[in-house]
Length: 174
Image 1 (cartoon, rainbow, N blue to C red):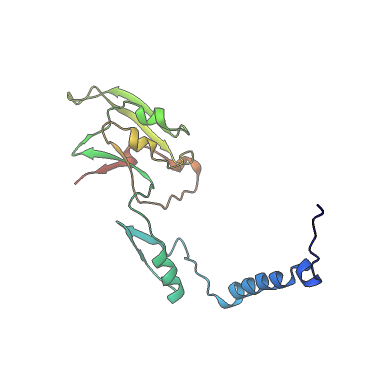
Image 2: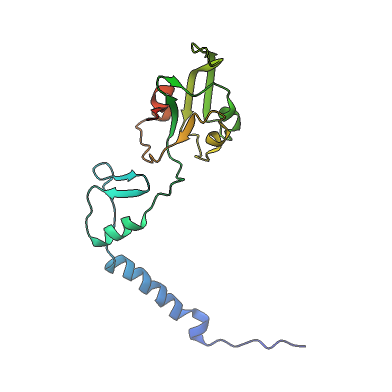
């Protein structure tokens, strides 16, 4: 059987109405809608638990956009090593280093001065330029020594500044 082909009118063939609709949306966003941007170094979003505050907001539209930005409780930001008092939890088992798919964690173990632990990390380094923030290191740690914070502003002038050492990763549990 022969199929009947529909003959399009010139208006339908050129998609003129759809093109004009698209241009209308573009013009509306370009001229009518207010723009929202934070001047990043001076104005920052601060995260407190699951809520955010804006240090300085320009207008109501910006406030509505900020209200829609929400960091969930399982947000994975900058890493932190947890400690109990003066003792670190990490036993340098290298599980987090092994499970990291991007080889962003480097651990060099040493004999621990604490008699309760066999080893402790001499060097514990996380290279944030290689990290994908997948959270595998947190899941793999048998001592729950590493966690990911809600700190999202990772800015540095040079790459070596984003290789974070053990002293910078320590976070005291209260």
